[in-house]
Length: 108
Image (cartoon, rainbow, N blue to C red; front, side, top):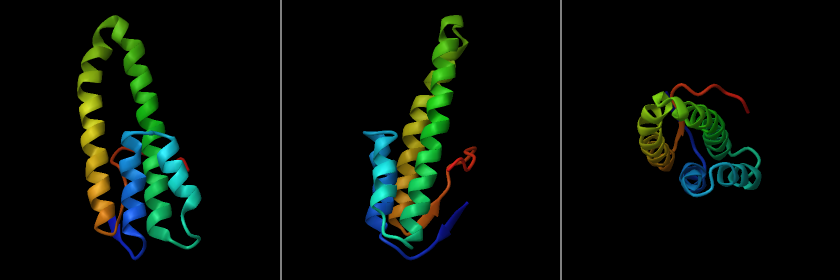
C-alpha cells in the first residue's frame, strides 16, 4: 500500500495535512510547488488530491441522501474516517512513504 522513497518528507506530509484545512487547495499548491523529480512529494500530493475528489463526491451523495435519513448515518461514519485517514497519510508521508488512500482510484 505504501512505497518508501527519498524526497522532502516535510512537504510530502504537508500535502496530506493541508487537506484538513484546505481540502483541494492545499494538496494542489503542494503539487504545484514541488520540485521536478521529487517523486515523494508529487505522488503524495496526487494521492491526497485524488482522495479529496472522491471524499467530496461521497460527502455530497451522503448529504443528498440525508434527506432520506440514510445518508445521515453514512455521514457519521464518513467524516471521522476522513479525518483519521488524512492523519495516517500525514504520518506515513513524514516517514518517507508514498501513501495511497484505500478505495481511492488514481484520477490525477
